[in-house]
Length: 167
Image (cartoon, rainbow, N blue to C red):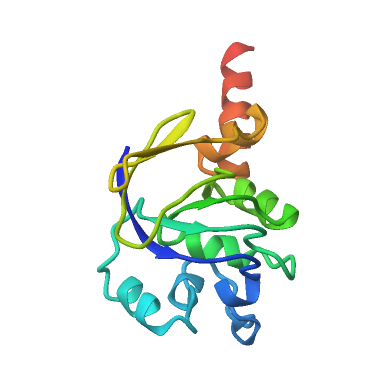
């Protein structure tokens, strides 16, 4: 899949930066996306005005999604169908992302900046702008299956339907 980097972030991007706590009264997945990175005004404006297509990429360094365990940080990004490529993730954010079907990719040595064109393959990311290749650290199969199904609820539904048709 070919895509574009729409935001480049550094280390320790907290869930409060992704979805600020002051909006915790709004928790419905249909409403939370409007607050994604709201304190990054230019980026948020591009999201709201639909200037950023689905499957665009946010690239981050280490510890993406640190801080609180709020699930809304993942759901707000899922609402825009963004792909997150980070060197690594905070444990709870990664689990919330899997449960919600947010496409998260661990790429420990990724080098990319805003507007770079990327090609995401199963085992590597190719930065088409720089010509460099970066290995992807695969998620455990069970987690990847949940993401691929669209989240834990969709995965469970699929498994129950498969089981029902076998019997």
